[in-house]
Image (cartoon, rainbow, N blue to C red; front, side, top):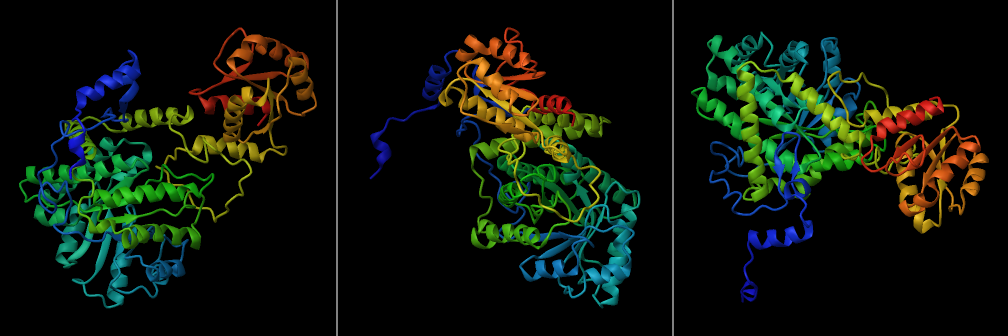
Length: 562
């Protein structure tokens, strides 16, 4: 029995007729089409007319649908340093991690490396994080001292492909017969940490990958072998569909590069790291949700290896709980949700296929501009500023930071670590305000001059309290006042130097101006009104949906002497 036979077929035209009735003349593109920071339009509806599906097969060029012919588990790669220590490394491996990524520098001695990896089996891949080149020969010495055969060593050296000595490193690795050791890492996540869009991250990674191939070609190294020793590192973020599409597009783009270079198109080795920019120090437990979404998206997108950041990584050295949750996030998705058992889960989705095409096309165009001599830094800076403005206006909300902050949250303390120089976290402006407020001997407060009954003032009072808390300012609430004089008298006894008037537009028409006047007459030097700016009211400042919350809070901090 086919239930569909009982219904008339409806197409896009019928859907558009209904949409136009709801929009009532408002422009469709402005109301219902969302644009990414790359300018890619996200439609409210996708059908077979938008994309017929990718005809390629998994494990075959251009590898959009995956690097493997059959499904396979991704590598759970956990990040460690001297600060986390040997016991944490062993706990991760004992708990199910497949590989270890070491974040160490040239100051790490061979003895310290041996201590960090004490008890780690030779079968465990040891990957040096990008920027750890100074530790390469310590790792090689460690393998030699432990009797690890060169054709059995597993891991990677993490060399920046822009390094002038990268071709020499490739040649040495090939000559030493390190068959399963990756030499270089194209670190696209580095660009994402600076604020790059998905297309900018892809284009920049292609440029670095091509620079690597050129260096190897000039050194007389077979390009197919050189490409086989290269890994690409991409950031996985909270927008699961953009993340999925990015990993799919990245494989397609690199296959095109290898084809143009005259070598057999090969699948791109992909290492996903959960975005550092999305992590917060405030309400850090929300980071568990962020990293879970990012890990899921990277896995669905076909990443070969994934590193999940511990929820407390932005605060300092992760503790055992942070490391365990990060590891188990992957294991739950892999071993219990079985995501890896489905090849290209998003394949055939009109939305994901269309988004993959759009990202690939945008990134390829930008890559061609980079090859022609254009710069990327200024574009990334412009994107960072645009995204920062969206964070400040809360168009891009950060749960636990700019939205629903817990002003009484218990601090999470960790051993400090040196901040990453290129990482620009989105939460930093609000976190700086919270830090300043909490450093004050007297925690700052703002009196809510609520006018009328609760049903009238609650919406704006809740809005104001939420915004104030994002800056570390505690709201002094109440049940509401019937007259401006009552509100002013209550403010006088509150002990707060600031008043925020909250009520409905109708009430403002009646008594907003008189309430401002009463408060000022009572001695309040800074009166804020929760609502759109209107010179008739005479307030010193206004807060409303879409306002620059960071600027408003900075002004309040200045008034409070913070």
